[in-house]
Image (spheres, rainbow, N blue to C red):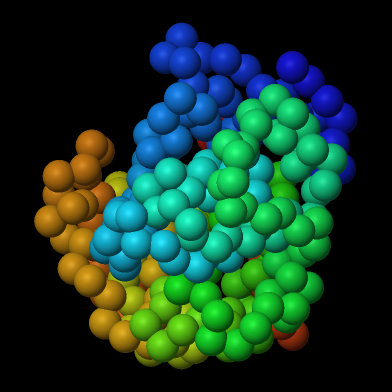
Length: 268
């Protein structure tokens, strides 16, 4: 199925394994398993799932805010593994959300509420100390919006997080020195105080373009190292401080652009 949406042309394709791929202008956005929403196919999505599983036991309801919606894969995961959880998705492309609801329906009483606003606008409307996890997974043409990775935005997220809450970023990089993710790591560290980095070794060494998941929290983050070693493919777990090094936090005034992935990187 295909439809014009606010950010381009969205398509949903059925895969031989029974899952569905959501693309916008050919770029992969989500892979959804309607029969088993706990099945997380994308590697970086599984890493965020690992974070969720260590933050809260299964069947324990939590409060999650998702900045970026697409196919609502992680929201579906939380809904099925932690029934009665309260989830808010901030997705400004309302046409895309409508298309997803029609082609990849949400289960009844999922507890997932989608608001047609940007991440910055939506976060400001939420109550202080109301959220266990904030997940930032938002892209515009395979680049992360600059206003979602600054100190000012991290402060907005910190305001709504509970004392033991976590803020998760899905970023992409592959440039020499990983300048972008280092700056965001420094921003997260300055705003929350502790955290870890989850990524494949080749990406951290600048030998391949890919996803880098950053996790920040006011409290020590549970040890993900054993989980990363068992994962397929395995991923590295580093202290946020190690990646940040001497990098300076990002601010709204800089307009520091996320690196865009080379054409075709996320086409399959």
